Length: 286
Picture 1 (cartoon, one colour):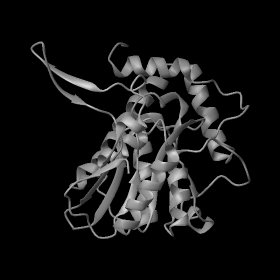
Picture 2 (cartoon, rainbow, N blue to C red):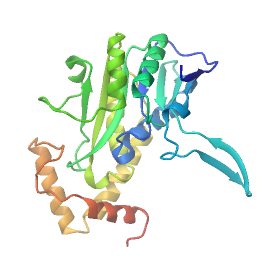
Picture 3 (cartoon, one colour):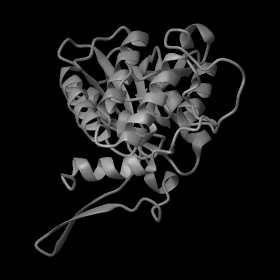
């Protein structure tokens, strides 16, 4: 066993939310969505996993607090399972922290064992990828689930195709064997805002989360942030006819229901506008 239990009383049958650092997270959508949930649930660590067995410290070094030249506490990266309840007594559990570099199968098995112990009715994973889609339209969320009826609640990419597995896929596979359904939610973030915080994508993930769980989440602050970010992006794009043309192409593609997952569409990569946007948001452009 590579985890240590804490003396914390868990809520009754909490849904398990997976949001590990290091996974695909364009626009910081998944991380912001997790932070929004954690702010509403009084979550405490239920189990902490042994970082020495799971993390490559050369790639993700521990952090140390230094005060007036004196080294203080070390903070070691590693996954944790947290549990908590909101003001109405509704419970959630969270698999957060650093995504493991090693031992994915043993780790997924142990997470599943804890999920069974907690009576978890559903596992939900968050993620986000950069896509050729406009910021002026609702953020699309696609799903992959343990069964099609669950995936159909959100929507999915039709047909058969392959992609690299994520940890939610691995944990989900183990959970299915234990009788726990699972679903991964992936927000499609406009490629030109993928390197900055894009709250609209976080909001879309939480809306999808509410759809599959039936839970009610307060997203008002996130909605305000999304509106402000859209305004800033609108202002920057309006300064360049090339960017306006790109946005028009993306909007037409969106309306025509073409694939927003990439491919040969002739639409610019977005690197230039992404760099300009970062400078603009830092106040370096007039």
